Picture 1: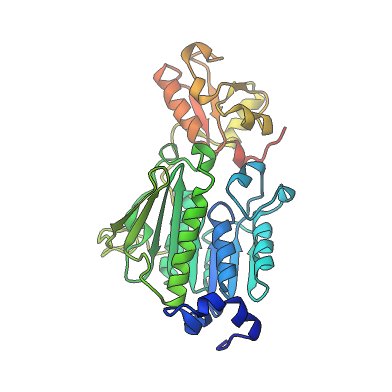
Picture 2: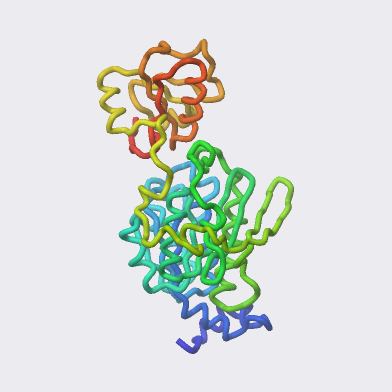
Length: 363
């Protein structure tokens, strides 16, 4: 499409008046096709602002549903949307903002099998996810498909943004291997300042617009760090890593790796639900180390309960020789609890892999 209609000329009037933007850049946005993975904290502001900016085709991929804890930061979702798929809620808001664009909902988990088909016809990808395994998968898929990738991540009060693409470093240059889950908790485990994903998401949307419209200097080869508590921004220079297993001089990764194989080998302190469920049926003690409000929402029964920050030797409800399973929301806090318990002599304690949120159990 090489023109804007009268309504579009009025809608994008403030863009068109920018001397370094104008009609040419707006037409590039209109003809652009973008994949946004994630309809949560980062995905909401990204989706809303790219829709408002006039990106012609926006595909949003997510498989999660909305719960009450999301509403503190995921601004596209409403109380009336609780229980609904996030992707449908966000896509509806984007369509409400701009009926001149095409918005597509991909209600599925991105895997090594499904992601490539969505990359085939897009010009750019934005990673709005919150876990390392999916980030590595998206990075690798974009590398093989030669698609630019706008990356962002948040943690408590801090965020970071970068652009990975041909000619620059990739995500694996920055983080060669995933950290263990206990050292990299997500928002559900570590908490997050509600406005932080808004700030980082807007920065990501800005980078996407710059890349698509061909304006300014995108963060290719740079990592932007933001500290909300100190109100500070820092920019670090990034260079391609010659030893990178994906884009280095002697790449070890030749094909897209299934998501289950991206992260490190299974942690010996973890136990799968398939095995834990058998222990539960046999009467093995389970220990919940989450906060009270989390336990009210969902729990494994029967189970004991001690919040992680209240864990102490005298409160442990089972003997040192007992086999026991510890669980939390996603698996990070329970791993820390198991490490602590084992240091106290409880050598047969194990953390439930993936936590209760992977089981969809309700009271």
